[in-house]
Every structure is written in C-alpha cells, then in structure tokens.
Length: 387
Ligand code: SAH
Ligand code: SF4
Image (cartoon, rainbow, N blue to C red):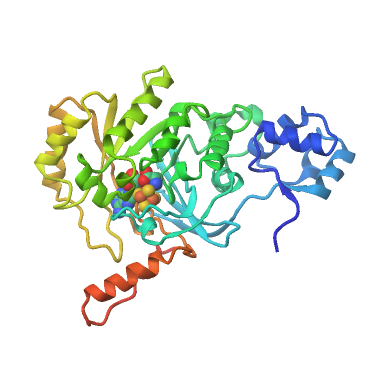
C-alpha cells in the first residue's frame, strides 16, 4: 500500500518551504530540516532538538524521512562496495563506492533499468521499470554516508565525509529522469546539505539532446558524454539513441552547455573499447578529428564482460595503441581501471533486480535462444556478485 506520509528526504529548500507553508509553518524551518537530514543523517523528528515539540508532533502526523532500503551489501577486496538498494517500485538498483587515494567516488543510479538499450550494456538489456524519485536518488548518497560513517556534527565539516565525488553512472539514463535527478544534484551541491563542488558531481549521458540543451538552466555540474563511436553509422548501431540525435547535434548541445560554465572545466568523453567493433586505428583517427573543437578529456573504458554478452574487451595492445594515437593528437586520455570486478560492480555490469516492464529482457532471451539454433540454451542469469 502506498505510504500516505509525505517523504521529506528528496525535497530541496523550495519544496520544503512550500510543504511547511501548507501545514502553516514558517519557511526558515526548511534549513533546519535539511541540516538534520543531510548533515546529521537524522530520520527521527523527535531527535531534532531545535524544533519545538508541538511542531515535531505535527510533522510526525503528516511526514516522514524515508530513505530507500539496502537489500544487499557486497564488499570487494579492493575496498569497493556495491549495494543493492530497494526502491518503491519494487525493483533493486545498484550503487557502487570506489575509494581511491584522497577521494571516495559514489556511482549512483537514476532509473531502475534503462530504456535505451545500448548494445554493450547489461542495464540496457534488462529493459526499463521506473524512474527513481528524488528521495531515492539523494537517498543513495544518504545511505552511503550512513553506511560509511559520514554523518556527524555539522561543525566537523564535510571534509570528514567518505564520499567526495558523485557520478551518475549507475543504472539508467539520468537525463530521461530530468526533474528528479536535477533536484537530487542540487541537494548534493547545496552547502547546507552535502556541499559537494560542481567539479565533483558528474552527470553522465548517452546523449539526450533536448535535455542537454536546457541543463544549464538548472545546474552547473560536470558533464560526461558516453560517445563510444566516432561516426553516426557505428554509433547508431551501438548507442541507439544516436538515430534520434546524431553526433553533430549532440556535440553542439554539449559544447553549448560547456560554454555556459565559464570556467576551465571540460567535458569527459567516455569511449568504451570493444574488440573488433570500435577499437581500430581508423576509429582513433576519426575520433581525434571529430573532437578537434571540443574542450574535452577522453576516458577509455575497456569493455567489461557480463554473462549473455557476445562482445569482448579490446586487447591490451589495441587499448594502448588507441590511447597513444589520441595522445599524439593532443588529447588528455585516461583509461578507466576496473574496480570491484569480483562483486560485479564495474561499469556496465550493474543490473540490480529490475522487474522489466518493456519485455526487452524477454526479447533478448528469445533472440539468444534463436541464435543458439536448437542447442540447449542457458537462460541469461541476473548477474550477482558474491558477498
Ligand atoms: N546512461 C548513462 C549513465 C549510465 S552508463 C550513460 O550511458 O552515460 C555509465 C557508463 O558505463 C557509460 O559510459 C556506459 O557507456 C558505460 N558502460 C555500459 N556498459 C558497459 C560495459 N559493459 N563495459 C564498460 N562500460 C560500460
Ligand atoms: Fe542506458 Fe547508459 Fe546503459 Fe545505454 S549505457 S543502456 S544509456 S544505462
């Protein structure tokens, strides 16, 4: 049964002010509530000592601070964590924590499943179930702080927090859940909540052009573009949204966003390397040419295999040749190292437990069965890490 109490966790200052006005309360309470929720990690109104007892009682009647629930925790040898987080639609989505020297990156999901069906992505293969609410998106950062001991006295400052960076590179296409993602991103960057700098919050998109065009009206967070191919013919095959918004339009919209930032930040171009598909020398040459006018850095992501995929990771020599060619053309190039592999936490391996509404996962199964041409076909198992 749907919960009748209003969940305050995903509300920003304006939404809380509207809510408070609706129960006859003063707007300044919004800041108090935000600090309790996002600096202290408090969910119990009774613990909010600077709020009068009658107001606490009133809040308990109509509202709740309701983070999503962790269904499973996986810890890897290298310090990475993967959590399966249960959302109200009933699906499980995944978030991943990656500690590195001097920083801790949290990779969070924006949707349960994804409707875009990129050919190399495990999430896409599952189809789509639901958009996450703003409470479920900010709730992932909230949960990671709770699990990793990041909440405490506000005067201890955000420096002590374990999550210094958030990337929206988990399950789903953030810009297809625009309002909820942008509300949550606002909370991440708000000084009275998590206070993450705009350089440390990154929205990754496969190229939803109309949303990129209006992004600057809502945020100045960092942007990553999942390009993955240097020409329309190939990109349309592996990133199907390209058929709707081709590369020239896409790059123009990204350039437009970067121009509004008025600082030295550049867009991160993500380029997955799949053996024999997009990793030839000619692709590197084309990519170097394509990005000539784009202030960017390039992040090469060796394909991470998952059960049910026919693609293979590029060889080490193909990866280093690709990188070298781009570097020689003047680009800053990084190669994403795989972390948390043994718990299925690497890019593109995130599958959670999505109750598909699009029947795509069933279609993929049927297709594989046909390809196997009468042979006994193993069902594509939902891939899970070992605890
Ligand atoms: N939908 C958004 C954000 C989530 S995907 C987007 O596509 O950008 C996050 C990143 O993981 C993307 O760059 C995506 O292309 C990459 N990825 C997906 N499947 C992968 C796989 N099997 N191996 C390596 N990276 C993958
Ligand atoms: Fe969706 Fe991103 Fe996966 Fe493509 S790569 S299917 S856009 S989650």
